[in-house]
Length: 136
Image 1 (cartoon, one colour):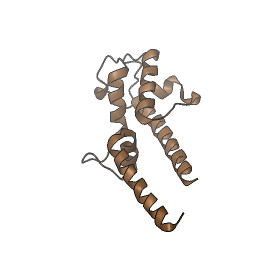
Image 2: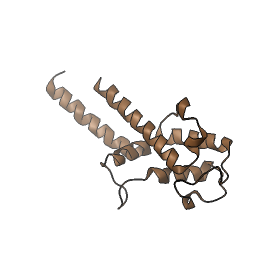
Image 3: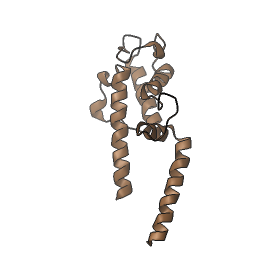
């Protein structure tokens, strides 16, 4: 491929990436974590806020997820094992990740902080795999 053609392809990929940023919250979140995009005066969309939104919708908690501390035991506030599966599926869908068997533990879904750590690890792994696939 000539250098002129590869330069044009590179510019087109950047444009496609910018379009994807507008429509895909996972990409916005990843770009935000890298410091490329900000959505509030404090910085980027907080992963923990996204997790709280998912908990509000799927965890069947007895209290509002926004009122809980990051380390609060979600099972003490009414989350059941069945609800934790729904939370896991929602997290997988929202962040385009898949929880491996080693992470299918009560402790991973027991608090907002634990879920945030797990999701950040899986998103970083996906980012690394994507970079590797693009460079290959």
